[in-house]
Length: 196
Image (cartoon, rainbow, N blue to C red):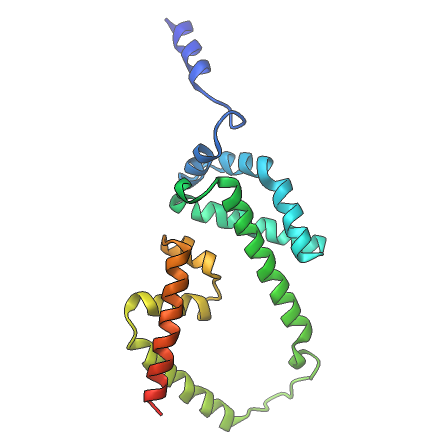
């Protein structure tokens, strides 16, 4: 009897190499790190090649792949194979991470404040007051938006999420996120003009 049970276990137990990408993503959603490793083994090379083409820097490409697979790990429960293949999803996540890293690097390199030494204790009180007033005005306008629109703008502009990341986090199709963002920005613009 023990031999039969062991034999069945061998037959039914598939190695990660034999499992489909969809099964591996489902296992990732359940917290299975071996499944993530298997996905990385299958798609890590292509992901790195894509990131390297975007970033044109090996270090940034490595960071993009690492952040991308972390995004895959976090978003595995919300993945829907009806929207596309696992491979295209992984490559899309890595692509967006690479673009974000390149943008941050360009912004860091071109930030003029980095080359100007900051004077200790120097504050620009009028600018701080104006910025505080403007922030309160924007917060008040955001409160007038429907919750779904407010959430999209807050996550995009205050948390720095891309539209793809928003779609993954909110479990909505990318097209819905884009149209909701467009509508939210239009309505916010109207509200801010009314406040003048």
